[in-house]
Image (tube, rainbow, N blue to C red):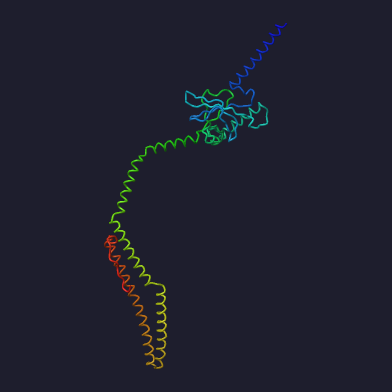
Length: 328
């Protein structure tokens, strides 16, 4: 009896150990879907996946939905195959376990038609990467087919799009390569020679003399401008116009008086009044003549300067005696 009981215990322990071993084998072979509600998704990358490891996160529009379960390299086309486990509990459908799977498959296929794709993204500045599901393609865009014979039954496939960092890193590499080919020593030597030549030019006495002559020419132009301003000052012109208006008014009055007195035969008195008006007009004419004389002198000086520059433009550098304005 004791031996029979011992045999039964041994058989029971053997059965329990076998079941435990079977469960462990199924777990390590990735058959945990029997116990958990997950879907297997597969994709293929033609770029480097550095920073992506088994266990890396899988996200849908930033929401964690699973992780990477396997990374392998296809020797036939050098594509990197990545298997992912997506937890269906993150997608609410309201159905039972089996119904959730079918609902998720329909949702997955529908979103692929709407442009959902996956691509590698960086997780901060650590260099670690994750896979992001998002709508990177145009809705209705033709789906790329998975490599023939790679998908296992029940496995979903999502096309991968290139990471934007690949283009950025490529551009940076190209720029660094171009920078490395720049001959900075030659550029530095050329700049040093140019600065030395510029320093010598600035210290050249001929250049200093030229600058002095240019300043003299500028002073001549400024002097002519001030003379014109005095001749054509608004106050002086207004005063001259006032005097002319008064003289014209006197002439009109004198003319009327002369006509009236001629009728009355008062010629002597009219002649005296005419002489007074004539003297006033002569005074105004003298002032006007003086003003016009100064204006002509100024115009003659400016004309001489313009003719000199037209005949010999280098005179502004070689130097020319300042024009003298009469009446200064």
